[in-house]
Image (cartoon, rainbow, N blue to C red; front, side, top):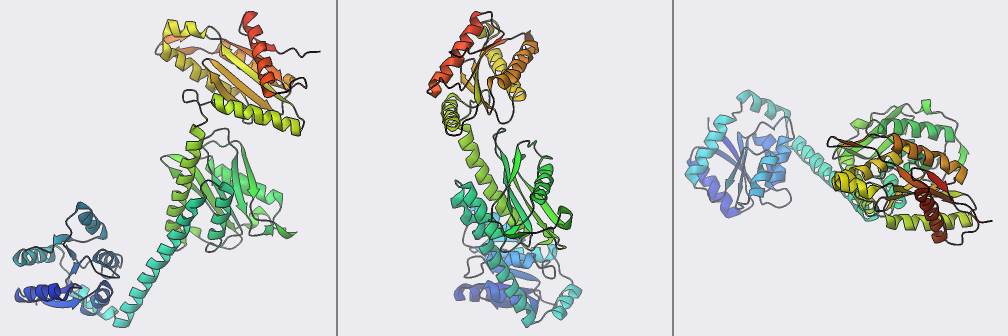
Amino acid sequence: MAAKVLLVEDSDTQLKFLKEGLIENGFDVETATNGGEAYKKIFEYVPDLVLSDIMMPVIDGYQLCRMIKNVDEIKKIPVILLTVLDKKIDSFWGKKAGAQLFLSKSIDMNELVRQIKATLRRYPLSEEYKAALMTKSSPDSAQVRLNTILNDLLLKSVFANEFRNLSDFMNYERVLVEKLFSLLSSFVEYSVAGIFFASPDDFAENILYIDTLGRNLSKSLLSDIQYDFFRKMEEYRALKNTKFEVVRILLGKELDYKFTDLTSKIIIPLIFDKKLIGGICFYTRQDMDYASFRYFDIMISELLAIFKMKYQYTEKEFMSVLDGLTGLYNRRQFEISLEQEYNRTKRHPSDFSLAILDIDFFKKVNDTYGHQYGDYVLKTIADLMKAAFRKTDLLYRYGGEEMVMIMPETNIEGAIIPVQRLRRTVEEYDFEYNGVKSKVTVSIGLTMNYPEFNTPAEMLKSADEALYKAKESGRNRVILYEQQQ
């Protein structure tokens, strides 16, 4: 029995030439002039092989091949793609589409026939297979399948584009969150949803934005969701400074259901380059398998792309205010923060303290052990500072071997506790780099926003004066600024 070839070509001239050549070489040939027609004829004609042009309107050869390979009943039918294109990318897409062979249209007929016969030998279809396919299918069912595939492709395209349109809001986190909730709520069933953008800044607040679809839920329920969500996130990264924020305006009477009433949930950490860049969650009172959602994989893929862009944007902004060696904020950011904190406490009276640290005899450390050792000491002391202070305290490298600490909502009596703790920790720490051990101490000047200061610069000067006294009086100590009477 002659092998059956379905020939797909939109050019009448090329179609006639190829059909005649294949018939002369003993093949049974059926033709189609586009991908949609070819897909239906596969179920009617049941070919041993599909030979298709790539460049066709509406559904091209790549798409036709993918459609064939994505349907269990017909995916065993071998496909050869023909094209006038000869770039590597064309061959790449041919292979990705699942084609058995990718050939140039300029191929000699004898060679084409040889390749077809070789492909048929390598991928034979049994008569039982073809007979079973023939009995299962009809022209109407093939059209239904085609319509389903085309509708699915359209929906996936629209679905993906809806997410990609949100890239315009990367700079406006609150707007981005609202747009995301608006989009997600249009196709995902939930009672409560959450969105979290991770920050590269260890001191940043980690906010779970919550959407309750306008329902007024109790704070205890929302707190339980916050705890549940961040407990999952902490499997990937320690997140200490966490809170939640309800995005949609609450309406009406408070609903009285509890966390245990949310019978279905899914919490999805979003990971890129082995880093947690964010997460989403859905909770509902209905029985639901979120992972079986029709476009779940596309949704996660598009969300990952958005969260990656958002993380990279935040990272870029963050790195511009960091000192590259120590990971502390840089001097420019310190000057901005000091002014902001000073002005804030003027508008809303409260205490805040400021400390300046200087590494004792740091020039001697560099001269004795080298600059690499000096860099190691700077980095280590910065790490000790991070461990000694609260997440709400702000730490900076002021310049050279000087570090600065801003402690909001803290008077000088409260500030001296972590400052002295840091001094003792540095004194007791065994510094060792490349087998070289040493001891290092620090001197610290401490002040607070006393009423006598009229500007942030005056406050900074007072901390500097206290630091000078600490160094003059023997180093390795904390000196408090003496308030003028």
